[in-house]
Length: 462
Ligand code: NAD
Image 1 (tube, rainbow, N blue to C red):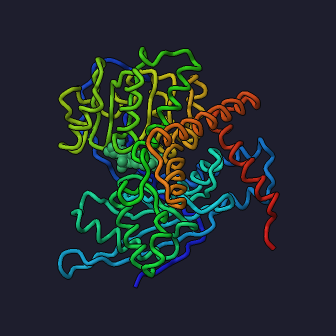
Image 2: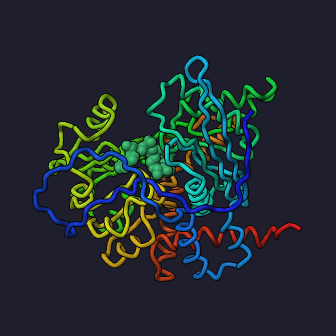
């Protein structure tokens, strides 16, 4: 039996990837001895990530004079599900895993958000990620609310068969806390279409046979044959590429002459790298959990992807020189695409960046303090809830296709995605200009205004 616990109070918790880099002068390009490959270290204590989201919410709420009652609602989550579930590992040994699903808000539609498998996932991180989903869906105008969850696990330690059993047991433990018109998971860090297919199959297996076909949209990001959408695998990277393209056009910076760096070379980072390179820009440095690689003459992202699929990381890629965290962050380029985890651009690293724009493919890559530093340094930021929204937009398309028993081709998906992304980009830009505020605050202003409208129209029960 799984135990379900509802936790009510946000708790401060250690953050992810708080590597403590040594301080050097900003943009110090003197040759340095590369450090050994970066290994994730024990996280240093830091304040709550959810509190950081609330800092952003407060900035925007003050500007729009958000109704204090609606601010109170959005400052808390609706439901928090914690499941501790046992899985038989080798023969008879049992391991107990902890899984989360935080449902932040469903005023605009069913809860929607990814599942992350990561050793440092905790309730605070799930809360923050769920709240970002609420604001993202509101900003890009799709009828979903916000949720997030996953399992506190290092998936690299388990075989595919064990991962399947863990995933299925997690889906079973979540039970009716997810559902096609209630809460719809999707892939996130260390999860993929295969994991979505196992969740789908487990969920459907618990239903009577005549109910199953009607519930295929319980997860999105599924493999094509299991009801997935064309273009969902690249959707987040594609949305990032659309934003970068629009930014370059508006700043009269031909991408054929531009350089870019990417942090994280998983689903989002590798697609963003390939698609931005496809627009003509030169990829010159990439970093992942194994370390960094740099080549100022250019890195072929397709070749790097082939290398990573065999060797598991970018650190020793023969087409580049190894660079440590500091050298990677200081690499001069036009565009930086963070596509890994939270808090990578902090008060220290923001001073090192030597780029014109940060296109936030990851969720929460920039701390509030770093936002201020980037602003002072004149570095543009395309904020996460806009820049990485392509994933949830195409998840919405997948959900619609499943509901209507349709299949859209890639051209149709890309056309509709571009339209949504460009519209949201233009609205954020215009709002930032109108109110003379930064783009992140403008994105939150737009999201909050939409959420406020629906609460005002529907009222608050009773
Ligand atoms: P992924 O698991 O496919 O890839 C994560 C990448 O980050 C890997 O290359 C990993 O090596 C790298 N990484 C991990 N720790 C790192 C570190 N300390 N330094 C540098 N690199 C590190 O995950 P993903 O789906 O590509 O997600 C990446 C980010 O994009 C996350 O913030 C996620 O929430 C966000 N996002 C994902 C989607 C989606 O559709 N998958 C949608 C929107 C936002």
